[in-house]
Image (cartoon, rainbow, N blue to C red):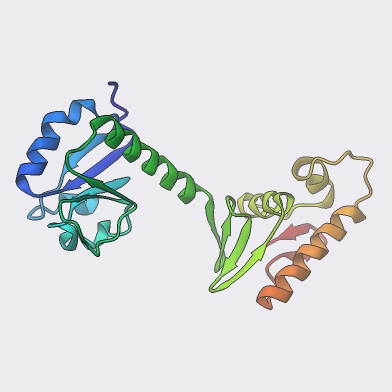
Length: 206
């Protein structure tokens, strides 16, 4: 099996199980790093997930707690929460496949979240969030907000019309004004924020 070293997975398991994983790691399409809790190296490491058994679950370093967890559960009952739980013996092919899929799914979710001011734009869910409040928005509105965030200058109506919403240059600019007005109204009604999108003679900006 070919290794895909763009995916790095930490392993925090008891000694015997760690040794078993080491023996079969050539079958994995991810790179596995054995964690040494006596070392500081893991604090500067960039992992995509962590493999942990139930005996070590409570020893996961604080800086790795937010990682997706692949739990090796040797007990019938456990209160430990993980994205994936495996019982022994392992099916190596399924284990490899599920770990890769979990890492890719988590990366996709991370890339879909964009922080704008004190809001979170979730491109995947098509929502704008602030605290407990959530606003559903359209794909065109997402494209507009994302472009505003990355632009160093205010965006004028012609640019928005042609480059973001892909309307023809013959479309009247008041169409854009109407769309943006509706978006600003939705944001005002949901978050009581009238300044999320600013409008000046030069165009729209944050």
